[in-house]
Length: 263
Image (cartoon, rainbow, N blue to C red; front, side, top):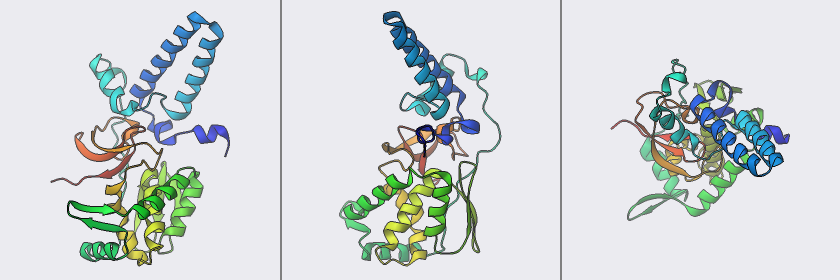
């Protein structure tokens, strides 16, 4: 993988690019470059060149941009300049194994994946360490490598391929599309849980529930927090209904890890 490829963030560029995020970051780079250029012209040119390249490859350079750029653009009355695609965003599906929740929960407790404390359920420390280590490895994978990892981890034969900046799975019992962050988290779950002698189909049923315990973003390694996202930014790809939808999302890149159900 080249240096350029390692810098690319397809979830925030191309058809997923958020124009308010791009505009805010371009303005930031221009202001910083101009300020440095006043002090020393070569430094200004370097900042402009590197900043422009990063915005092109990654979508933005200022951490947390997806959480504030659209609101900032709206606050200054420029929302109409950046029209978003009105098409329905692609929904990330669930890898459902049709295992009873009670069976799945008791199995994970018996295997030591989850531990029950007086104040609730928690992911066991050793399981979390392995889970996050596997996610760290997978986030460096190319789209084809991630698709291969998904195919290897699934407990059934399926045609798996990169599609729409995510992974499509076409198997005997399901035909689904999952986002890249979800694919990374779910494959890491399957490896971690199956290694503890849990039936692979039970492990498959645990992929969505265990994402509720995510603390580190599968996509970039940033901090995951409970938040409300708006259906307006490339950083929230996968949010497809209410603009006040509650999720676990990355504070750094805006990736959605888990979507809370409607009450």
